[in-house]
Image 1 (cartoon, rainbow, N blue to C red):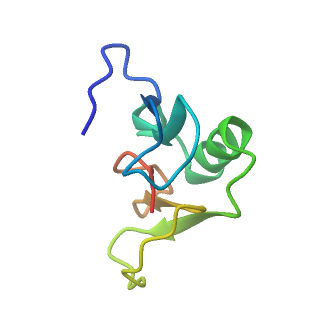
Image 2: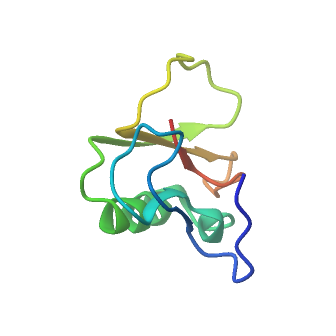
Image 3: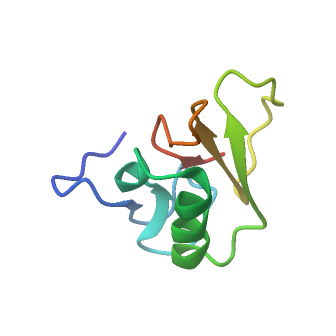
Length: 89
């Protein structure tokens, strides 16, 4: 996974995993860790309006394991805070 010194969004030049077209596509949002889930989802949607699904999900919830390049799951703790960097998938 790409590293970003300023802890902001990680850009994947040329697409991520060869499936997202274009240069500089944001695929991970480490700067949202610690924010409330709704705010994080808004940040993600604003930076990638092409995403069809940006969902806040409780940590440990059962989810499908399919890979979707139009979806981001924002995992939150019991207090509603983001617990790990949301990513496309």
